[in-house]
Length: 198
Image (cartoon, rainbow, N blue to C red; front, side, top):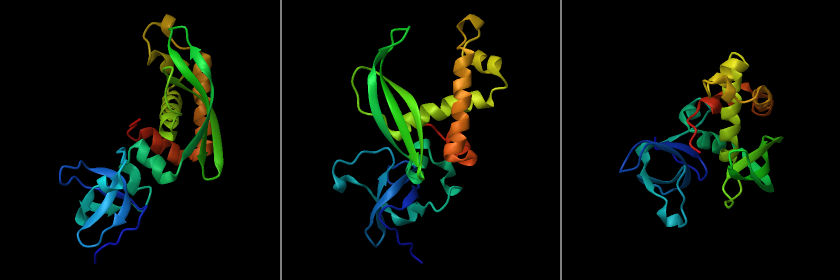
């Protein structure tokens, strides 16, 4: 029986016709042998540019287990995680890193999580959910899986004089706790172990 796809379906696309294996979202089912799929990470300014994929190369993603090989960007899309942000100020740190400071709020299933976010450079667009979640999850997970402060700090610098502060470590541990509350423990771990493609 031929599978019929609906617009908006999350799908896995096998490598075919010069397209690498990827995940995407169905634009429309053309009937016959092809399905138009917008591939994750690609920008389509013209809908006519959305590729037509052979039907046999397209598989519906029906569960979190099937989505397990999705990169972080695909997981966020599948879970409808979004972000709103407020620009706070320009900043320059002790290493003369010029950056934009934001207050970012992630949204998921009616819950929110607000966190500071910094982006390098004087100009640029507002942060995406991927931008914010990539750095937040990475830092929280690295702190959580460390045995203790010394184990965490020495992973970034051998010389104790160059270690980040213990307060920084505690902030990331608290972020891990907040992310587990916000996402649920299993989803937080899935995000942490996914390919981070920001």
